[in-house]
Length: 517
Image 1: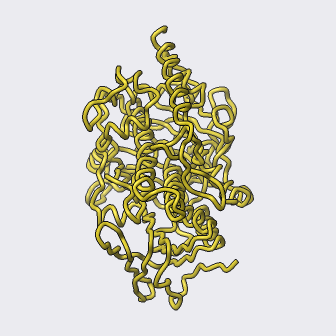
Image 2 (image 1 turned 135 degrees about the horizontal axis):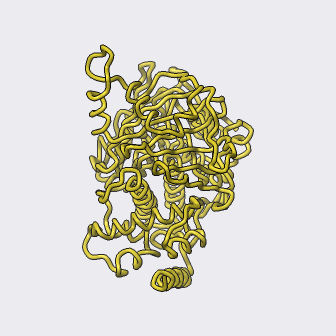
Image 3 (image 1 turned 30 degrees about the vertical axis):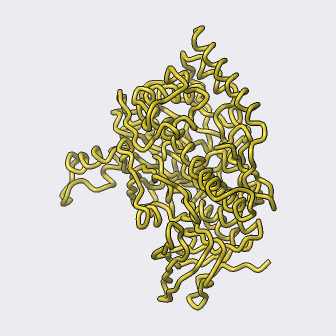
């Protein structure tokens, strides 16, 4: 197979391609891999040269079936990334930690904790191996539309060359910058509840987290709420012997600390390292783990304002990963949403190009698929923040009743008192009930237990969907992703009545359990 991956300034992108992918992160690379394996002409333009640093090192188990489907699982195993068998969550000082053990609650027994520069580079190289034309150091500077459909991109290489590239479809995986959403569509909405700042670095010589029963938990993800409720901290062991440690707090708290902490002669307030160490000091478990450790890199800062676009797809385009939406990293959802977006974009485009469905159905599927996942995670993260901050109210924007229904159709009668929602927006009380129910499901999965038998039953039945390959019972708008090489696309549900009956049966069972308690 001819492999085309170059940073040579004399090598220029083609003048035309069938599918253009903007960005070579996990979402862009996976979309290119999937489409190239289907024999479609794909060109990927990446602004940077890989390997390049990126945060977001902890993966969910949903990555495993996708890596297996495209033939990358064995390569990931051989690379030596830390196997993640679960994680520990301490949401309140003095309370027992929650432990989510993938070997007990997931079909897939592990995920990974990765050095993203290496992980992302493996994906990008594999895209080229599968047949995608990959051009690094090549930034897309603009996209031209004809009517409501994008038709060409303008690019600029770091060596000085520039040009235009025509396409039939474009997948925007340009990350936080979100080329289409921020520069063309202007449809990005922010979530003020998650207006956070993260500061982090890497440590060596640390002690492993020790579970309450005294056993060391080698390689486990660890999260701890700051004891004053101002934020939380992550600890992610990596295969190079270091541990990624980050502190996340609301931007208002970050700015308050800039002026409140001692500056030791610094101008303009405390520096980020002082804020970072202040956060570590408020996490007693993590502080003990780092007692003999040495910080190996300067402290970095990331603004992780959560946001969501009004639409993720349209005629000739799909938004994927952080270009579409970003949710607070509390639940390690970055690569999950990137892979989900890649699979959905590739399947909806491949199905459309084969003539299996019309344009409106393909557009609608991708938009609803990503929005359903985003709403689901937004509610779960809100519940965890409600415990961390001891707050009584969670405010979420950009969640319409149709999106909410898609994410919570089974438990809707439990949390709304009715199977019907009125108007476009979701009632705040309904969202609050959903937040409470979501955190009860998380607590059940984390072996902390709750007084909610319905949440216990739902977790027992494995309702937390982790497999991006999808099945008919996870259909969106009557379609689901058909994960077959050579036939990647969207399949229409033919037994919708049976699926609806099974969902109604589960709903009735949940209601019966809840009412009898």
